[in-house]
Image 1 (cartoon, rainbow, N blue to C red):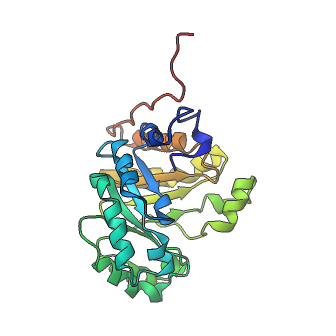
Image 2: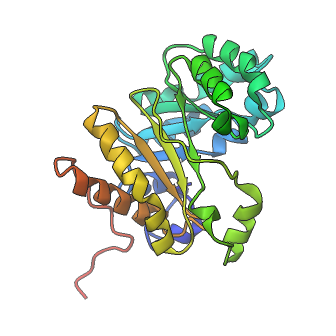
Image 3: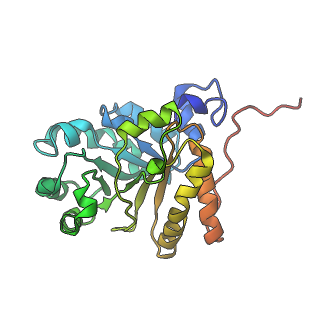
Length: 273
């Protein structure tokens, strides 16, 4: 995500070598979603480069490869899982959670496979599960079934309610309209490290209005001693780093003792003229 073209020259200096872009992004935000690992397990040296560019307390929420979650649906996955866990070892403590995103067809009847898979995972990592089948959100029995199966893993909601509140008005919104899940909101944390994914609109005012309930929820989690991670998205993600910092600032209005994020590296070099 830190190579997003729309950020170059605005949030990230441009031109900037690819192996330096994460370092610059990490001055804006202290966490990132590892989406690229869904498509292929990265080389160990690539992951080592990510570690070199970030502080030990930077948070990677790294998605398991689709061969594990979507193609083999959590069964007969020892080999690809072993390769993935080996590849991300250089992250060390930066691996905040391993993200198990399941397809929309993964239904309550499939929960035993998830429970079996989670029981076999090493306890050296924390795990976060994202489900997209509507029954998990609307059927109390299915909700309880999943929560029991998670047994120490977090349930990560993807909140798209603000996005689907009005018809799309841009090309990016129209594309997202056909791809993103439309599910009821969920704000119950199961662990001390809740993770939330929020999708707003390309219009900043609508995005900010839609995240208001999350400001209260995240502040409440912090008061309880939890360590939440909040990811802010819009369909084009053009302003995502600035929006993430704005969300952090709004949480600080509820919790004045919460530390501010560091000042980001300027996108353009400072000059005297």
